[in-house]
Image 1 (tube, rainbow, N blue to C red):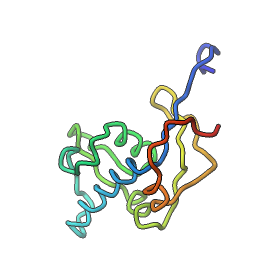
Image 2: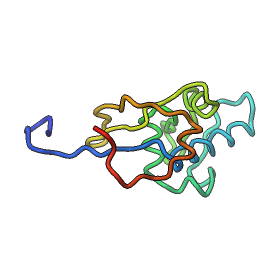
Image 3: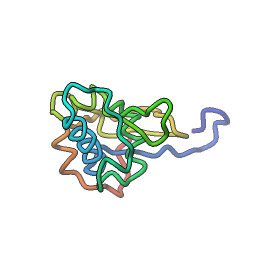
Length: 128
């Protein structure tokens, strides 16, 4: 339901799948090329061929795994939580439920990076 008018409205889901994980891994590897320099911002086009899915960036930001440069459009960097996820130290919710660009809630199910790397993009609906 729409929080403003109580009419039926659809939220959509974002799944942590191969495309998301690969995009994040590309940022991780780029950052690893410059050890000790956490402030390594990269333009979207510099990150790699698997990073061409524009929605991956905004979704990865919603997970808290990437952050957007405050002044340069198109530049992002991996967060500490993003690095921990790629290294397998932490898990993230498998799904985000999004309405009008805001995360309404996250799934109870969580996923590890290596699990996400094996998951192809799923066209079916996520569990509620």
